[in-house]
Length: 303
Ligand code: MN
Image (tube, helix red, strand yellow):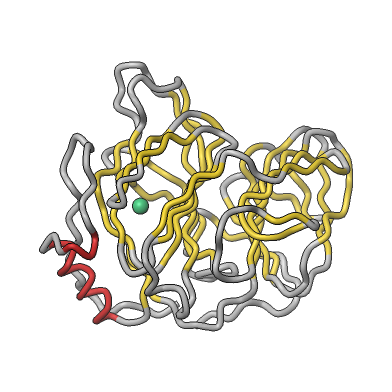
């Protein structure tokens, strides 16, 4: 198991391209083979900006199950329509947060609405739930208002958790933070951090210098723990996303759409999804097939 670095480091971890849904390529930053998690953040996809013609379907991810995690959806442009087995139906727009807590089981679909805006760009995260919360009932929440902060030429939104004396209304189960940062003015400034958290920064657009090292889209910048601040410098407007959290002291296994602790839990969840067991409920109104769980072919690797 890779341990969180207890001391500050600067590691550039290249993202890799993965396919999601019917036809969307995304840049996957987590899990990375060198750093499987950052705090409880265990999955991070960056998609777009992609131009969507009016006649194009856009995003289409059919009904699929989750266990043991929270999904966090955050858009920079475009719209996504969410449906789940609790009966939630929610359109999400830039600046709004969708957070779904799978607990012991939920299913959902995601699609571009019809009609849809001409561009789609956003982030999809998973947060691993700790032992004390991972068997809870599922939940879905939409937050249209989040703490906004302006300081030192930065325009920030606190998506989840606590940072800079603010707290997001989104319910989470371990100490963590997710902060959208627009570097609107050029300059050099120090952003205070919680030294108990490990952190990583994902460049979204433009170039920034992080503790003296240049960071650009295409790689996650892993920062380790033990920092009480981060030096950020830019010579042109830029956009980054900062995640952090207390290192999760639990072995966590990821397979397909499941976060669990061992292979038998994965097999059980997979069987129950395929059998349309009531554990995962039904998603109503999605015009398309539910996703099929792949075969578990190899021994799963703890991370
Ligand atoms: Mn999902």
